[in-house]
Image: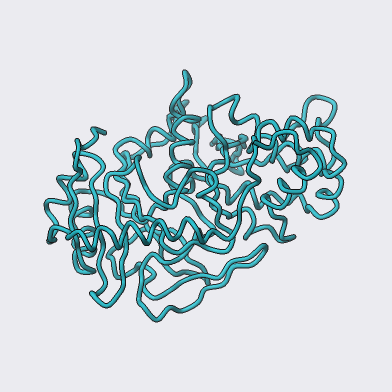
Length: 379
């Protein structure tokens, strides 16, 4: 994607303009995926119109708790991260790798059918950063993942800057929000005040600028630009959580033999919820299946978790047999050795792992507990 130069194109659009955006994207052949209210949560789903967005809904979150709540202002994007991330779209839980038929001798590798074209509407800055992580992991090395490439190539990304963080958010401390600086085609900042319900739209690519030029909008005035900037800046100061202000990679090294891992293990259920909802966890395994006749076989790639006992199975047994060792592996990789592999943290501060942990284990609190025991990495 080619970046727009200097003063990126920008415009103010209203709620009807948001509807026009969805219609235009669908007319261009995109499958539009965005947040919608479903099954008591704000989930990601294919949208047929902007009316399916969660207008008037927010969320209350805490460790091990997630609840919808109605809002009086009708905002569409005033909610924090839900149970799904864009990983569900770009790196889905199940992908068929090949299928084979004994009768015909035919082997079909990979997925079949037309390559999908996704428009991702409502991508938070933390999730923008997570997509960037997945790009590096799954498409940035010598061995690209064809299933990820198939979904990611040609994706149109509409980011929404965060103006109301949740109680479990800490993206500001991880350098992943609440503003969107790169990685998007269009970025929206939602404003609901005495001047009405509207969106400041900015283009981040040439394709985004062209799409913005097709929408009904007006040039933003200085007062509106300041109001949007202040809303995003204010969100940075209202994060509900924070990581310790120190070198987290070094903290993980220094904490290798800490007794605190036993304390975490006494609470952790090793259920793997944190890895399932995490927008950057990418580990997979394979499953081979056949029909009842044995004439048709398929191999599927499915999500796996480092909390699963069989994740480290080698001939003769598992490497990490204790919950303590498995939790330590997860957080040490996420906050530490990810830097060595991919040049960044594996955590973007979305807070999903805190919310969807049935035991209410909080990654920021665990990091703080380790930092109190091993403070050498503090600045």
